[in-house]
Length: 303
Image 1 (cartoon, rainbow, N blue to C red):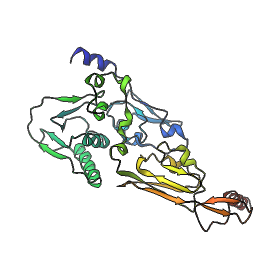
Image 2: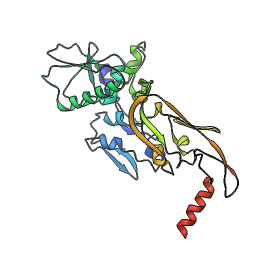
Image 3: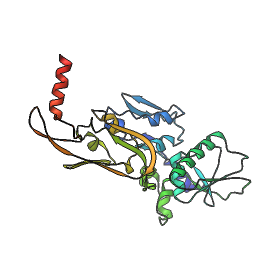
Image 4: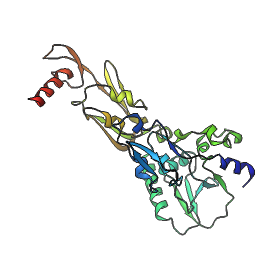
């Protein structure tokens, strides 16, 4: 390793969880995906918020790829690419989102010297190929044979620049991590803009148009105006925060790959039969405004 590479390695820093984590955004967040994916038990929850124990962390990068809001700061392990083909190694296989990113940059083949893939690599590639089929893309091809490598390696500092524009300068790719960190490149919705990975549905009879979902959604998937309630799920990453914080439990989030769609529900202006005030609703059969409904419900509880 050259002096420059040694200097760059010395600039490495520990993984950490950012304030953009949904657990920091709301106490109602139920997201635990970083915890669920960490096989090293390096992530724990303290007072409802996730923390990384860097003594246990092996920097596998799975938590970074799994986080739906790109709230974990860190870098992927070294990957080896040979003639636009990803090389199978003894290390942990890339995360599914990593593989989808490689695929969009033209690396659509996986090679190795093994007779067959180990179970972890096999499962990861199989799941990725299932997703690619739903995205109307050809699967990764796998070639296991004896190869002579002239390595083109992507270290944990170079992996993020892999998604950058091909015209990006070599000097910028070699810049220390703190100066060019870009964890948001793991947002697969940006890589596949014609598809959405999450289906968002709203129970119109339960929704009170409180706008909590609109205010907390960082992806701007919800828009409520004077005439409609529009749901644009293409950018949705499945953080579940809208479902978690909805006071009426009217929102349902499901993982599903489908063509990108926008759903618009018309708003109606009705007159409350109790207070005679006008109010907005999504249901034609509605007869009472939210305020009057809540008063009745509260009275029934007390009686």
